[in-house]
Length: 490
Image 1 (spheres, rainbow, N blue to C red):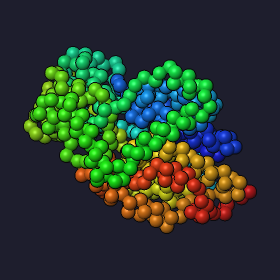
Image 2 (tube, rainbow, N blue to C red):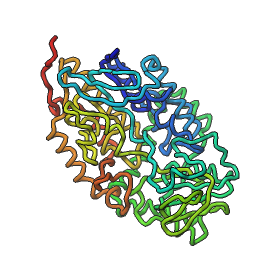
Image 3 (cartoon, rainbow, N blue to C red):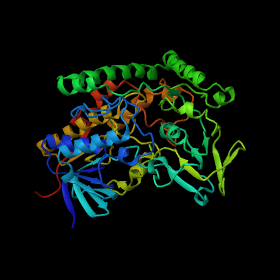
Image 4 (spheres, rainbow, N blue to C red):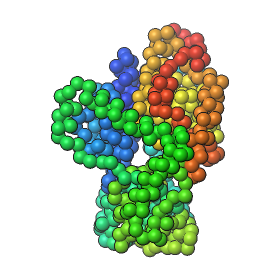
């Protein structure tokens, strides 16, 4: 039988949990979360690789409405973050409102019935409103490398870590040097017989100002009113200070890059290895990486850095584009996620059957990163053009949640059955964002990053401050939407 709900949230990660909590607090009681896994957590449930941790201070990487005085470190680890998300979700009664183990396989707007029809592994669901909260770090990207499928040894992605495979004494190739690899490489390096790091592009790495949280600080967070809010304010100000350099890269980001250059020189004394690890683009053009042990691990005698892309796998041998090779027992893929080409784009369709991917043609667009014209009553959290290189995703998603809660509650109060953002409003916003990006380090730093889509356009980044983002994105204006009269008989 078809199950109908007023709001269906896709995904029980941070975004989905936050959206469901705030919708219920606003009086929207018929909210259900559909989650493909068996528990809360999203990316923090999926990523369990050794060393997995946050690169944003813990005080900022949490809901503003659910402070956590128990963080053990300035930068929380994956188990702590997962436990936090799970606790907040259960304390707000979401366990009873979440359909675990249910995968959405398709969704289409039914214009005649003025609702969404969702196909899932548990049958059909219908909903007046849909919140897509699967997030951009949801689906791992597997590289198209000739021979990878025929590799005789063990292969897994960092986001699907095989904890049953014993790496001790093995010859291991790591393909990819992004945020995940920077964390797990130092953890596995002491265990393996040989580690071959295939690095297509060198990465800027800054020292991570991490430390255990003193007991006295935890007591203050527990007992002193507004202490957590004050800490968030301090951390926010520090991160926004760095954000100014992203928008004015020359000379500000060049000055910050000096820290990375000095750190690299201090840690890597071998000039040949240091040359391999020295980026040829401006810091911030790609995601900035923080680590106190990654560069150090690459100097060990059992590590070989191959400054090249991988062209193919021949039997048990990984072949580099520069002619280098490595015979290995296991391959670990640190190759990131489908950030701008999420599989959801292929299965979410408008009233005429055209998918989001068909509309976007490789360049995702959404007004305020949240609503897309032609897809009424649907909201995306952590959508296009909202990424920053310095601030917390929680700031972004809470602003979007404020927007969607305002939209849903206003529609309920006014009796509006359908909200569809006006095409000209979306187009004007997209043009404004794109016009502001060229001067930022994201576009002018001299690199090719995952911020750029298949058409070469930056469909990921927000070109202004976090304060501007939260102010603008959280504001719902009905005049931006086409509001249709109900066609469904009352």
